[in-house]
Image (tube, rainbow, N blue to C red; front, side, top):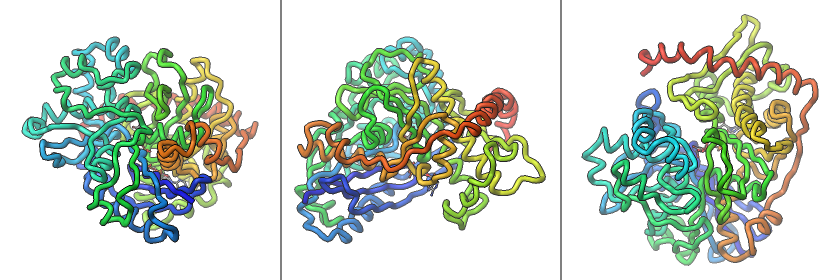
Length: 499
Ligand SMILES: Nc1ncnc2c1ncn2[C@@H]1O[C@H](COP(=O)(O)OP(=O)(O)O)[C@@H](O)[C@H]1O
Ligand SMILES: O=C(CO)[C@@H](O)[C@H](O)COP(=O)(O)O
């Protein structure tokens, strides 16, 4: 039996899956790392931490593995998107990575809009300038840390840096490059036009490859560190949402995904590169060659729940915190939560807005708050679904993955709020599975990703919407949507008091 490894470099943790040729998860390791949040709106990580935790995880996985290590044939990656890793000429990291959920770059987004023009930007990159994307981060470093920027030789995305440390080879691939705001998404080339306009040397952009492309083998140092064989083939991999889509079988038109990790996304497969959502949702290259996807993003989805847990129930596990929420009625007894803890992306691209609990009552218990948090996150994702539906998409079935798909009551809440069937898969680790599938396809085990999906992906349960809950949530969603407008000015006034 042969095996592949899928490494998902998430925001909360690196998750590593060992998968056999039947698509069975044989071993699973997860190693977490913290966010560095020096100020309100800032979010960074130390790339060295990703490398160390991945190496530790792989070493643990190899130790647990009973078979012959030479039978592990391929490795590929899925990674949190947009994060800026800057390397100098010696390929040393110049500063901490500025992450996708860091919103310090509103000023740089305005500059990009002024210099490139919003229409031209949309034409080339298919996306508007948003704080989370990589180009505004590059411009922020150029403006505020010129001594760092001067030394920059190449920029990389998180999983591309990890792969570089494992192989010594520097590459980017289209699905992650699409989230930089520097890629011409239809032509699949770095945009020299944008680089020139904003004053970024195009040599900073790494060479581009396809997600399933073989980029090398692991270095002898990394092999010694982990126990892996030096001959294991390394494939480029993809953005976590592209990989989540592959790992959930979102490989044809009409298929929709909901992924609740640190962020939350609703994603839809696109065959074509010329749909027009006027930048209301992200439009990126898929990890499948020449395919695309559109996506709405809630910045603090799982993060809202983990924030609540860390703040009010630090010592408890998620399972304990979520106990009993199925006994709280839909609507959490009149308590509403908006998950804008670090600002928002879809449908409100707003780095200043912050979250709220509306309707707190003396009768509310902790579990009402927990249910309200889950419902608020799900309402936020429903705003993305609403955009898709308003643009003519039929969304009646959604595959749900990510840490959020571990809880049955939350899956039912998703069915009721989205008014769609929710499909749970045998593994909620869609991005890691997608990465492993890219390795399996790259190794030649299958003639297409779709063929691999048919073998590897196993739906285990479907949650159907309950009519009474759907009606209740439709009323509540109308109220939820008003909270943004009603709290926007208040949050602008509060901004000067933030850390
Ligand atoms: N048992 C659970 N039930 C519900 N949600 C959970 C559970 N365990 C983790 N989560 C949620 O999943 C999130 C992490 O999901 P994950 O997909 O691993 O994220 P990432 O890829 O961003 O690291 C946490 O922030 C938490 O909100
Ligand atoms: O910014 C985005 C997508 O545009 C995020 O979805 C990141 O890709 C992080 O993903 P998770 O760590 O939440 O999976």
